[in-house]
Length: 231
Image (cartoon, rainbow, N blue to C red; front, side):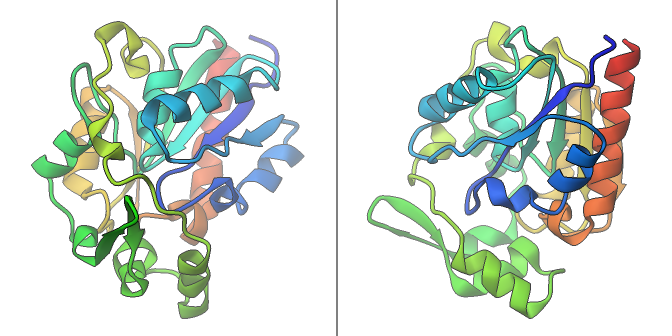
């Protein structure tokens, strides 16, 4: 595969595509086409459809990168023939018949004590940033909270993929494991990354290494892209 892969980012809950703003410029400078999917967290099926629509707007081959819940969207959308690899950042990664909620219940984390459901959405309370992005400065934590976007309250119960729709079963995977994560438990990250046979890089960070330690995230994506180009 001589062409540099296009890099397509998929965000998690309480975020949008701008959460990758610290890693996108370096990858663009490397010569990659880069785009961040902007889905609405209204339903898993609609989020997957938005990923597919975004794939239609860029060249292939594609390296899909998913943070947090974005791991569920790249798992479901990554079976697309244009996708050649997957990078998970502190992410969930359901298998056939599994929901994200199933995974989170196996390894409970601190963040969900700082969530309030209102108007059918799951909102992060202002003090929830301690468990979401606690290694950022106070000012940056406030910015994360001010720009956070709440998912529909039952989003994590909507997965239930069939075996042929689980991308990590057939595509090479890389995993950035955040060892100080209080949102997706590090033990959950270890379990899903081992199950998918991913190439794992551990980073001592909160749930948002792409904001707190972007150089490590950039390095892993570069290594994944280089490995895919070698075929």
